[in-house]
Length: 75
Image (tube, rainbow, N blue to C red):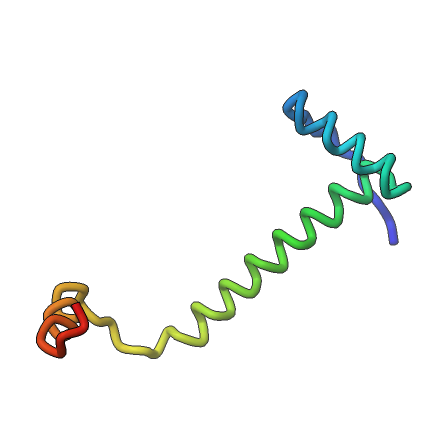
């Protein structure tokens, strides 16, 4: 896998925490950051897929849902 270099600026406390985690896990900061970014992008992809799956569902007005719940004694 080819890699690209980037400059990233971390908050001082966050940088300290990343350095400590890297030392404790015997991994590089780059490995930890790459893993975190991959996880974040995967979560975004899951969210977008869920939105696509539900795109055909009808929109329900909030007020109507609340009214129905009250009528059914749920609120």
